Length: 305
Image (cartoon, rainbow, N blue to C red; front, top):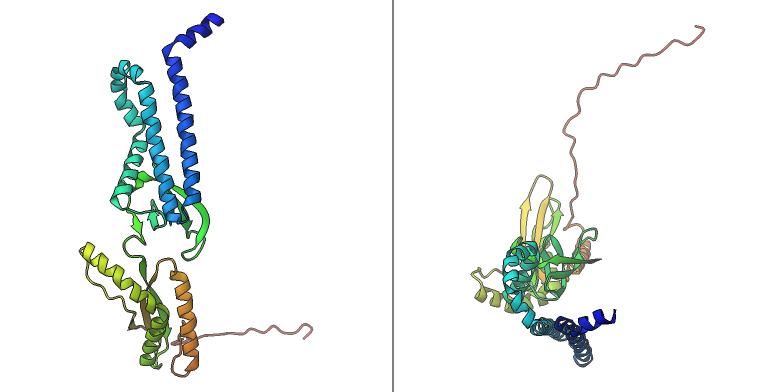
């Protein structure tokens, strides 16, 4: 037993393994200490997150280089075997390799950043972490109506950036266009309806419009896109039942639902001040005609008669 233990201790690979384990523990400890120091020193959440990720990534690279350095002599002797097995390893780990390539594309291709609202792989949510293999989202929607969190944290493989479209709601232009549709009865004051919608939109989203103009100019300079109007607009169409007004406006992508709530509340309050001039419509049905009904009543004679 002692002879076997002595042979193991004298074997060079044993000490390489020991030194590799010690080095990995020390590097991991250094990463944790630096991240804690960064968390205490930096108050900005975005800067703290970025520095912590950079420290972790640098530490992983240091671990790989350290292990390669420790086992450099052994790697030379098994280089041919690794070359033969490389094709099989690449095939077995193709999803992992594509996910790593996706992480590189995300990091340098400006697909999205942490805190962006995106839809990746059919999942919509806010990006809360971008890892080497997966992107972590705080999910939005599903059984929750509107742009609100549902409480689920979803991890999506980075390989999806090569397979499916990536929808980013906040990258270069952190605003979205939204609409409110109002049915109005025939005979209402159409000009008053139009003026009321525009006035309310200017009161509620006027500040958004001013802020969005600078961002939109940068988008127009960066991409081949037309200079779309950002001011609120109202369009009118007529159908068999009512006159339909559509208010189109721009708002912050995170406040779409609350903005619509405020707009509806203000519009209804304004309409209530002139109920005889602004009358909202609802689904009605007109009975054009009745078919001829032939009803025959049969009476039975009373008993005993």
